[in-house]
Length: 197
Image (cartoon, rainbow, N blue to C red; front, side, top):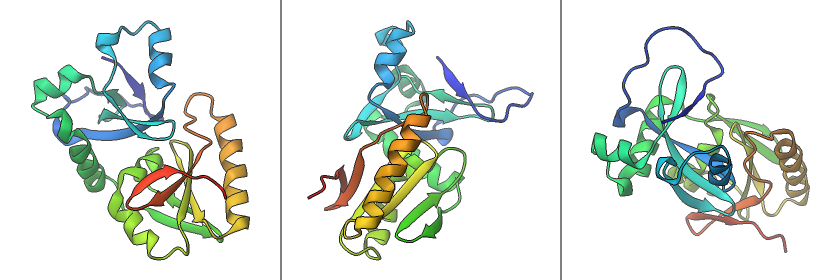
């Protein structure tokens, strides 16, 4: 069992993990090899699922002072079916965090929710269905770090060039929490790696 401290740490006892505090986390595919390099045995690795490109979905218990990573035995002990973990985690995230604040410097838009949960917005299909109706062409998104979610239109050369540059800079500056330099596109109700034409 291990976790990651939140930015603010206070005293007091941690509550027991439960299905109600299960939330998603987005990681780069190098996450698991890095844990193995630090001596975490295979049977103690957290649950992960492929998301898109070089990104993974994993899960944590959102406790007051830490995000405690979720292991397969945690799910069995708490009666959380593995095939329903994502749905439960997204529901908890929607309940626990405010709707995203859309900040704009056209042609780039930024989504803010706080608590380093911005990258997890990739999992909220309903959000992207709504935004897709407002963006000409296709949505192209960048998630270079866990607290950065940018998007633009596939029809904006200026927007594409700008988020590509920002993604590369932010990713390079986040050696621990960097996610991906790849740009993603929302297409046919799911994410794919964006290929510039």
